[in-house]
Amino acid sequence: MAQTNFSTRERILGVAEALFARHGFAGASLRQVTATAKVNLAAVNYHFGSKDGLIEEVFRRRLDELNRERLAALAKAANTDLETVLDAFIRPALNQSLHSQGGAAFVRVLARAYAEHDERLRRFLSDNYGHVLREFAQVFARLLPHLGKEELYWRLDILAGAVTYAMADFGIIKRRAATSEESHRRQAVSHLITFAAAGLRAPPSPG
Image (cartoon, rainbow, N blue to C red; front, side, top):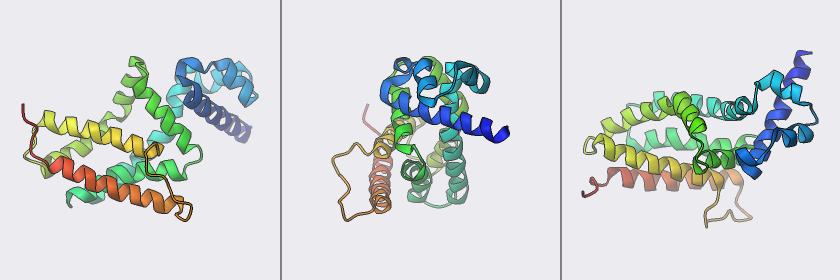
């Protein structure tokens, strides 16, 4: 019974993630989720309580793992240099989009969370995962003493957007047929670290 419940729960999450990526949170109904996952509404209510609970669990399933990896990498990198700390922030995110089943769909879900003006969802993400960015910010602040707090957070906000964009692989640089996905991601990580390090080290913006 426990295995059946686990399988049902994971099936619902996978279907919901794909539908939210395709149609948005408002556009994908619970009826669509249950029909595609071949479960009844009672199963969704049993495992998640509500549509909001389902949406939150879609994020928890990916972000809990991602941020554990980020914080573990940060713990090793905290007393090193800027590029190593950037690697701790960037590489786990791009690796997740490459290796996790459904990772590409989740990136689109994540992008929708910020593109759609859902204050409740934004608050959920901030309350549950904002501490990770704050821990990185403390290390960046120590490595970049020429930046005030507001300037630093502007740059970290831009960095987070660039990482999400790179995860989604929306860019004009496309993987060559002879290049593996993993090699392509390594190149993306390397270029993004170089670009972000230059931006973070730049003098404070005028005015």
